[in-house]
Every structure is written in structure tokens, then in C-alpha cells.
Image (cartoon, rainbow, N blue to C red; front, top):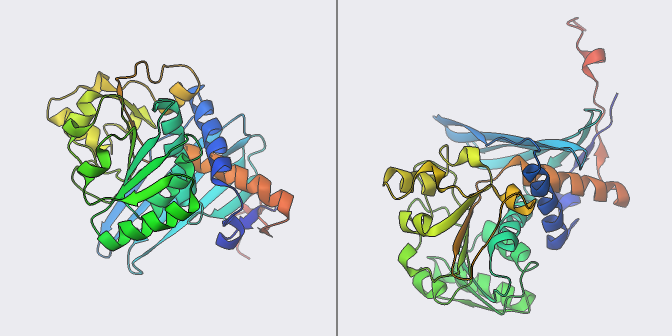
Amino acid sequence: MADPLFLSSDDVTGLLTPGEYVEAVRDGYRQRGEGAPAAPRQTFLRSDPGGMFTSYAALLPDSGAMGGYMYSAGFGAGDAWFMAPLFDAESGEPLALVDGASMNPFKTGAAGAVGVDALAPEDATTLSIIGSGPQARGQLHATATVRDFEDVRVYSPTPESRTAFAEEFDAALEASVSAVDSSAAALEGADVVITATTASDPVFDGESLEPGTHVTAMGQYHPKKRELDATTIERATYVPDLRERVTQDAGSFIAALEAGAIDEDHVHAELGEVVAGEAPGRTSDEEITVFDSGGTGIETAAAAHRLYERALEEGLGTELPFAPASEALTGKLP
């Protein structure tokens, strides 16, 4: 019998700092770059009632953990539930079941921050964020730990949302955070651009990107939807989280491919390969770089394992008795 921990949303909230999420996720991508297995998400859609069921996983041998995400969104309740199962990579025993919604913006933000740290100019001081929802918040919390930003600009289509976002972070960060009224205004002079939207079409003109800019795109993972236009992809050194997903659900890459702007060899490297030193990151001051983040089991397993370790230290969580197959797989009626 195993006794994995159930970590509720209340257990998870505030358990790690944004910087600790980034540290855990960076190490997860380092392991991926050194050969740790991970696969792109699988998504199942239903039209009546409309909904999406998604799963993905990774095995992180150095952490001694394996796990991932399973979540549903939509369907009859019109809501979403995120579950992150975590297993011991040595024994195979279950370690934890994490209510994943509370960690989601932070582990996703950490993946974006690792991309910024690996690819953005070392002296970046100006950050632009397009989007103002929970994922944009997670991106800013995490990315602020890897560069000393002085000026942060946020644009989203709803003035009230972008203003509230700017006021919240202007009070929380040392940087000056302000709302702007267009994506073009956000991009002007930006060293780093983060897109965290639900947009189906490009959210800025790639011709507006100045030489040396880094872009992290994390809002879409659908073959027919994209935050970045073909010009941006064509101009950039392109780094995805997983190479395998670029022709599966990386809509920006797929659209650029279909437009003839690039070919499949346009992929520079996976993020993990850059983090592990297996491939170079930025090679010049004028280079435009893109990290295309669709979400993987890498950041999920890494973050869940770090949460589990901290929960053990803090005495948090509820034990769930779990019978191994050798005991429960009997085929006998009770």
C-alpha cells in the first residue's frame, strides 16, 4: 500500500515563490536537454457538449520524479479541472496528486521565464506583455526573477483589464509598469515581448520587432490558431519547448510553414537543449529569438515535484491510501 499526498489548491497556493518555480522548471528542461523523455500533449475534443480533454507527461530521472497533467475544460459544467499526478521514478510508486489549477500560471510562467533567461539579451530592461489574464500574471511574476526590468508595458484589448493589471504590478515590482493602448506601442523599444492571449490571429506585426528582441509566445497550442505571424517566425531563431509539437499544434510555426516562409529545418533547438548547453542560445546582439511554449509535462512534473518536497517539509497534504496492482488486480468480485 502506498500513501501519496493529495495537495489541494489551498495547500499549493503560496507554497513556492516564483523564483523557486523557475529554478525547478529550469532544471526540468536541463534534464530534457540531456535526454529525459517527454511527449507533446494529446487533446480530445467533443462538440456536444463542447469540451476539451488534455493530457501530457514527462520523466525527470535526476529529480527522481515522473508525472504530468490531465485536465478537462468546457463540457456541461463550462469550467475546468486540472490534476497533476506525480510518481517516484525509481520505485514507480505514486507520490502525490496535485490540484493543478493554483500552480498552473506559475509553472507555465516559469517555463516562459526559462525561455527568456536562455534567449533574451542579458541586459534587457524593457518588457512588453500582450494579455492581462492569469497566465500573463504568471509570466510577469516569473520573468521578473530572471532579468532586472525597469520598464514594463502591458496591452490587452479591454482598457479596464490592462489598467488594473498595470496598477497591480506597478505596486508589486520595482519596475515601472504601465498600460498602453496598442500592441504597437507595447513593442516600441522592447527587449522582451511576451504574448499570453487567447487570440486566434497574430497579436502584432512582425515587421515591428526591433533587432535583438526576444519573444515568448505561450497563449496558443492549436494548429489553426496563432499569436505570431509568419514574418516573426521567419525573422527569428525559433526554439520550441518540444520539437515534436511544431507540426502538431504550434499554430504560428504551422502557418509560417504553409505560407512558404520557412521549412521544417527552421527549428533551431528545443529549449532543453539550449538550457543544457547542447545548442547555443542567442549568438548576436541583433538576433531576434522566439520561444514557442505550448505547455509540456516537463514544467508540470518539475513544479509538482518541488511542491511535493516542500509540502513534506511543511507537513501539508492529505494521505490517500493507494493499493498496488499486486494487491488490487484480482478480478474477483467483492
